[in-house]
Each structure stands twice: as structure tokens, then as C-alpha cells.
Length: 576
Image 1 (tube, rainbow, N blue to C red):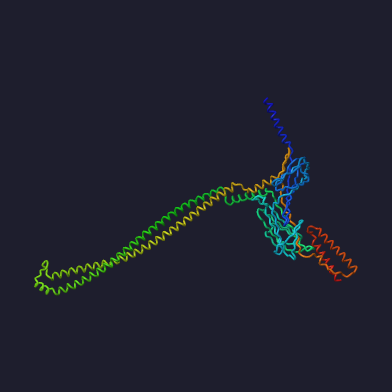
Image 2 (spheres, rainbow, N blue to C red; image 1 turned 90 degrees about the horizontal axis):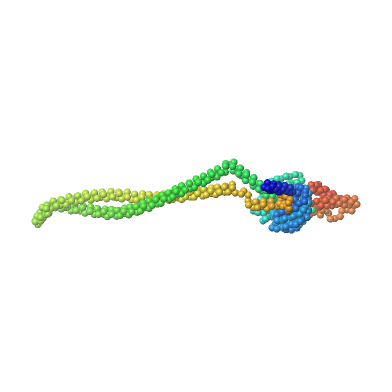
């Protein structure tokens, strides 16, 4: 029973695989063209044309998805079974539609304008007032020699930020009528032949883009008009190109960095070591700055101490100087008194004998049994001793004066030393500030390197694509063909392109050449009248051919030459 059960399960599994393998599959290639018609002064409108190309024939049921659509009528080559529109997304369904291999299925629907386009035309530096309708814009510029044509492009608000749309702007003009003489931006390609000048720009549009071309007017049509053809503007919405370009650019930059800087990991390690070295230098400089600041404080304290000592020594010197003055005066007084005493003693010795006789008469007894002469001599000797002592005091006073001068010199030198110490403290303080600033700079450099390391790490590890571009990619790639039922559909988006349709510009430069014909009647001669009528018919036929042509013909120069010949012949007929 177990074997039978396993066999049945195997058969069921094989049947499921066979059913899956037998499920029909069809490949559908999809192309989207968004034609944005721009009419200056009237805004713009967009019509989206979708083409589905099936690789194999059959009967299929499916739903196609379209983004950036507006809800409106949908027309298709094969009637749709139904459609649903919401939030700019359109879903169109077909049930049991019979398709042939290689036969396209097309449908159109209104769409959202994805580009903001404006047009500014000026003649001789003055803006022109344009009247636009039915694919044409008309303006009046009598005798204009130069025309400035300016286009301003920008993505609309529905395009996410970070998306760069590849935009191509191309122009083809006839040099017989217009010739480009100035560009706001040189074109990437420029080709000139005898009857056509073509030039083209390719840009990635992410913001406002302005392009100006100045044309020199070289000719006009017979109606006195200058036709300025509109440029061809296309934008690709396929983000795969942008993603591939970003990936290529990223690979190129990584390869360049590898070649120029070596291994990125090793570079990151070296930058980290440099950051650590700068941090260590900053710390050491901060320590040196603190030491210098401390030395500056010590120098200031020493200067203050010396200043106090100078003050005290100056006070002491002043006190000693006052005492010196008093002592000097006392010594002078004592010296004078001694001098006077010696003179008196000398006089006493001269009269000593006479005085002794007089004293003896008076019966005076002297102390110690000294005679008057002996006492006078002893007093004189004492005065001499005192005089010598006064001399030694005077010598001491002179030495003191010398010492006082040295003291004042020392005080001045101490005062200078205090000032120098103050300056030294200021210099040390400035050095401390400089080292602190240098340490701060090293620390800021280390922090900057640290942020660079983080940015480098994030750039190597983070998502290389902008989120807006990824969102836009998801939106565009969601435009797939979904199967209904058992059929398997492989949907391939081949292109999604915006084509900007700008109006043809007609500038009225002069009056039509036909109005220059004479208004008076020519002489009535039958032969000349018939010839004149024939020439007028030929001219009218030529004008009719020119008016029916919507674009410049390569034989326009020949037609103009024929018209000039007709005018010359008419002039000759008038003269005759």
C-alpha cells in the first residue's frame, strides 16, 4: 500500500509539471510614445500611444498597465473589453483577443505632461508677441536681421527628485533662409551641407535647462515671411539607461580610486592612523599649552614679587637717604663744635700760666690734683680724638653714599627685571594660546578626517542609486502586460519616450512680393497682353505650389530665381 501511495503521488506531481510545461507562453514587446503638444500661451497636452507586439499568434486575455496617464477616453485598434483609471495609472484589458504574430495592437489615451516647456522668441533684442493656433505661431518683425530662439525645459512635479532624464534637442534648418550665429551652449554635433544645417544637444535634465540659439535671417518666402522650424525634443523615460550610466560611473570612479590611491581599505586604514596621530598631537599640544600657561602664571608671580621688593627697597632707600641727610647735618655741626672747642682750648693754653697764678690766688684745688694746663691739654687731646672719629664717620658716610647709589641702581635693575618677567609671562601666555589654537586645529582636522572616513565607508557600503531614481524605475517597469487566465505572458518594455511637439514659427518680415506689381495698366497690345497673362499664370502656379508645401523644398532657390526672372520680364514689359 505504501508503494502504491508513493506511485500515485509521483504521478500527480508529474502531471502538475506537465501541465505547467504545457501552459502557453507569449512574449509581448511594448513601446510607449508620449506626444506632448506645446502651444505658447495655451499650455500643453499629452497623448500617449502604446504599441503591443506579440511574437506568437493565438487567443489571449490580458491587461496592460500604463503610468502617468489621465482618465479619459481610450481608443485602440482592437476594442478593449474595459479599462480602469486611478491615481495616474491606467489598466486596459482585452478578453479572448485573437492576435497574429508580428501584428501590432495599438491604443491611445490622454497622459500627464512630464516636461515643463516654455518658448521665448525675440527679434533684435525685443521680445515678440506671438499668436499661436493649429500648430503655428505668428509674429510681426519688420526688417528683422536676427532672431533669438530660447527654449526653457524642466521636469514636471510628477517626476521624483534625483531623476535625470536623458533629453535630446535637435534642429534642422535651411541656410538659404536662416543661419545660426550664436549658441548659449555649443552643440555636441553640427553638420552642414549645401541645403541643410543640423545640430544637436544631449543633456540630462534634473532641473531647469535653458538653451538659446541666435539665427541670422538670410532670406524670406514670397509672402515676406521667415519660417523658423521648431526643434525636435525627445526625452527617454527608461531609467535603465540612467542606472547603467550610474553603475558605469561608479565602477569607473572605484577603478580610478583603486589605481590612484591603491586599495581603498588600506587607504581607509591610513586615514584612520592619520586621524589618531592628529589626535595625539592635539593632546600633546594641549599639555604644552597648559605648561606654558602655568609658566606664564609663575612669571607673572615672580614679576609681582620683584615689584614688591623694588617698592620695599625704594622705601628703605628713601628712609636711609633721609637718615643720611640728618647724620650729615649732625656730623657737620659736631665738626664745627669741635673746631670751636679746639680754638678755645688753644686760647686757654696760651693763657695757662697766668690763669694758674690767678687760680692759685683763689686757692682752687682741681680734681685729681691736675693742674689747669694739664686739664686743658687733656681736653685738647680728647677733642683731637673726637675729630679723628668724626673723620672716620665722614668716610663711613661717603661709603654709605656709594652704597646708596648701588642700591638705587639695583632697584632700577630689579624694576627692569620685573618688566621683562611681565613681558615673558605675556609671551608665554601668547604661546600657550597659539598652541591651544594649533591643538584645536589638529583636533578639528582629526574630526574632519573622521567624518571623511564615515563618508567613505558609507559611499562604499551604501546604496549607489538615489531613492527617487529607484522609485521612478519601479514606476516605469511596472508598465507590464499581465495575463488573465492560464496564459503566461513575458512582457518586455522596449521604450518609453516623450516627444515634444513645438509649433512652426512664422515671422512677418516684409510685404508679399506680389504686391510690388505696378497698379497702372500696361499699353494695350495683344501680344504683350497675352505674354503678360501667361507669365502671371506661371507665377500664380508657382505660388500655389509653394503654398501647398508644408516644409521647405530643396528647390526653393530655383523657384525664387524663376520668380525674380518673371519680375524682371514684367518690368521690361512695363517699360515697353
